[in-house]
Image 1 (spheres, helix red, strand yellow):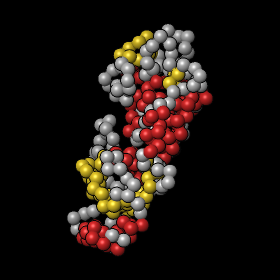
Image 2 (cartoon, rainbow, N blue to C red; image 1 turned 90 degrees about the vertical axis):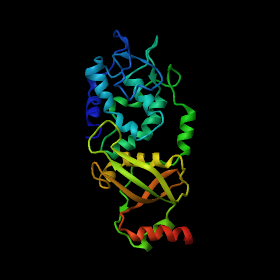
Image 3 (cartoon, rainbow, N blue to C red; image 1 turned 60 degrees about the vertical axis):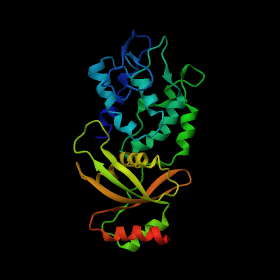
Image 4 (cartoon, rainbow, N blue to C red; image 1 turned 45 degrees about the vertical axis):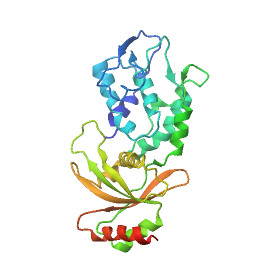
Length: 281
């Protein structure tokens, strides 16, 4: 059901916006959380999807996009989305530029595809104005910073091996770029918060090219992008400690390769981590 409601709605051609129709300015309500901190406080109705009923259409439909934004698929995904569903209230209509649409689409469409959905037809980037017009352009600083960070993507589910032998774990430590321990948690019921979370600190066994300040966030984004894989790792309402190994590809993409659930009885993992500290490969 990931994004299904939003994507079905966006497939309807009746939602096209007529810039000649009268509009009004309203305060972005607190319950419209996906756009509450977007950088302005008033939005124009109807929005660019043609929605004019704030409580009945705009706010409920906006929540359909929260899971996509939580994946961190692009640093300006919120700016792009809110410029359409909650356009800033100025003297003139400000749409996203085609270049901003393309930047967000190129990063976020693969996330939608991972959940079995196409990029919405109504968000066809050719429909938006070029940078020569008055529109929202991509922010170069965000794009440059985003490209420099290791980033998770949709991937085939990594191997999961319970009660592994010491040699198996050590081989994973040696053959891949990084190894970390992290406690993964899955919410029992939907609350608007991310369904999967990384609890507490991420401990490095082998840091490799991962960044200490970003790794917890990176792993959580991996879980939210790869929901099918994540659903097999933790039962609803439960937490599980894992040893995760993987590689960072030359283009900065993070690929998880092996996951070992670490239970108290798993002496093999504990022994492997001790040996790694003293002997390495």
